[in-house]
Every structure is written in C-alpha cells, then in structure tokens.
Length: 87
Picture: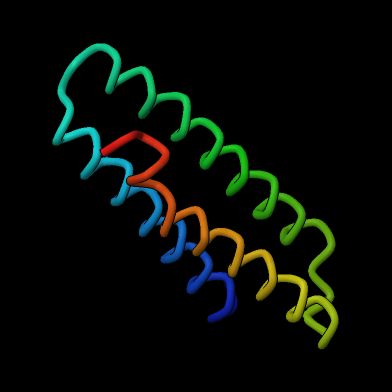
C-alpha cells in the first residue's frame, strides 16, 4: 500500500467516526437504521476504490490526481455526515 492509499483509508476512518458519533447521540432504532444505511454506502465506496486500486494501480500522475479528487469527495462526506443523520 502506498502512502496515498493509507491516507485515503484514514479519510474513510474519519467518515465512520463521524457516523459513529452521530449514532452515539441517537441510540434509537431510527438512528441505527440511518447509521446502517450511510455506513453501507460508505463501505461500498471504500470497497470499489480499493478494488480498482488493486487491479489498475498505475501510480502515475493522472492516477494520483484522480485519487486525490476522490479523497476530496470522501472528505466532503465526512464533513456532511453529522448533517446527513440529522444530528
């Protein structure tokens, strides 16, 4: 794993931490359902990026720029996670 891939994983950890914080504030069935739905979307996003990186990793400039753009999108997910659950 490259340093860029490890940093991407940390950005996903931030999203999950934000979702877990919102779940801790709303420990109801509704809160658990919202958490499960958003966690599933986040998980599949991570899985697809990881599978693509394992299969087609060229490690050139274009690949890194696209990966950074995807990382920015995940950071936006982290920033909006608490608003998405209504906390």
